[in-house]
Image (cartoon, rainbow, N blue to C red; front, side):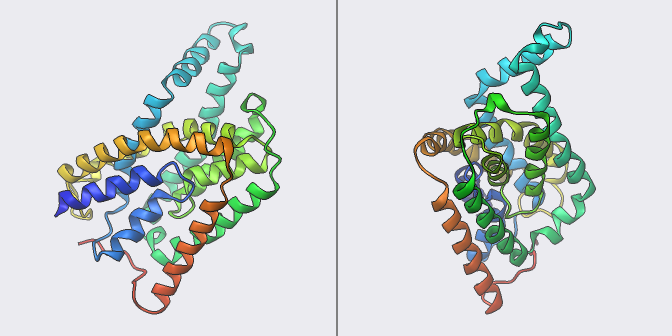
Length: 278
């Protein structure tokens, strides 16, 4: 049963990681619908390695270009005039907030932040923020116009995703739209910015997987990670094509509807808000 559940959770992770609907929220909420234990913050962080490896493979050309340009800039003044040098620093700068706050609030992330009622509120509130950004954002700035100030703001938006229900991609994309960036540009940058944070968090939490505070051990965790990787590859391509032509409004409606449903279930006693890990 653990391996079957791991496949389901890996599928859920792969489907929701890149959509602005919060994969961590779904991994906390949906097990309660089936009467399963909360898989735990460590399990959630580790299987995200799978979806992030999908990002690395999908964007490998961008990553190599940015990394090599940044390295050349360390030794060449002319190379520091290139976009790749700036993008390398923007990813580094944008990663600082989530690393600092993640370490500062790591105990709350594993416990208090995973209360289902709070996650439902975050789904609704940040869903409405995404809707506002989609409606009022100018959406006409290319990623080449990215500035240091905007990189910091992107990083702060990403850091909000330490709270399940916010959505790493949703928070970053919302900030991008509010700053006037194109949908596709904001989405691509959100994917690139997430790589250091997600891989770092996953590797950092590997040590906690055998711990009794997690519902799944190493075997099911590996299965879930592989499934999330395979599904994630397909979702990245689909989402980038989707946002080139359509808006994020359906995701806003989904977030609000799911958040309201969960709050109703908690209020009526059908679903508990507390974290249950055996």
